Length: 458
Image (cartoon, rainbow, N blue to C red):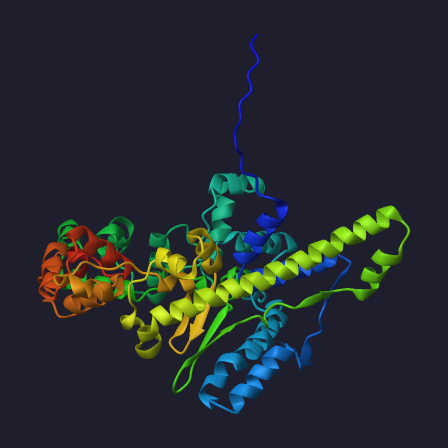
């Protein structure tokens, strides 16, 4: 057995570096939650008090911003006032959440007048709780009957009754059945319409009118009329009762306020609390003679101070990135989305002398609010589009191409719509050079159907 010695370098990330990168990529809401958990775990952390106005949380810094804005530009005050209004609204939303009527509760309220036994009521309640967010019951019925100790016929009796409740279409097992139930409730269901709904929904989606007219032996006009009626139905009868817990609030991390001569860029640090290290525990660490206690306190103090440093670094990095974005995308902030220019992550990294991974973490999951709305920071990164005039490429983005595609489709003959190749040629006439496949990709992204889907039948 021969022993050998090799020299090799290995890179190890310390726990502090990992923690620093994690904090950098947190958005305001995540950072607020992180500080809250840290304050519970680390006894030396003291979260600074927030000024309280009614149910709203307002930081002293935000108050200063509001006072400053009030004395300058009243129009832009709304961006910061919105912070306190959002806090109040969110609190009221959560207070109301427990009292909101769910789909199950709404359905059960319609059965109050029925003389139901406790057993029947329990079964109906269980069935309503099985409905998905669209109001469909997609469980395997034989298994469900066995689970409820019912025969298959008995289960169908309960389901038939459930399907008579409002909103129409609730309790259906599929989109076809949902739409059939709605037409039946309206008294307008015919064998032809039922055939179309059961066997030709994909043809409707693809605008294949001839397939429908051939299968149902009806005229093109009659088929178009039926399809228009079907489009008025609600494919998701339970959508108005969707689980509100799935709603995520977007809190802007960067605020860009427009003044007459300049833009003011502010980092929204009012969302998360600031904290300090307890002077009591600092003094205890210096005076205690208990070695274990001193070691514990020193580690917790070091942790708190490091997190403070990481948060300050996060703010500094985010501020640099935001200022660079505003500088590069000045036309966007002045004139709107169609004035956005191509900008790469590598451009920001080079300009700020930061690694691309640092830029990526600083932008990840964060939003910017300006007079044009709220946008993910990544929205301001965009590649350039090839143009006939190379000097124009640095000004043309996919958004410009998409806007042009919308305009071309808007003005086309709807009975003979353009295919993607012709749209590509039309774009070339305007100096934008993209392939047919790219046209198809952009068209799908902005929700425009293909040639067949856009065709209108006379």
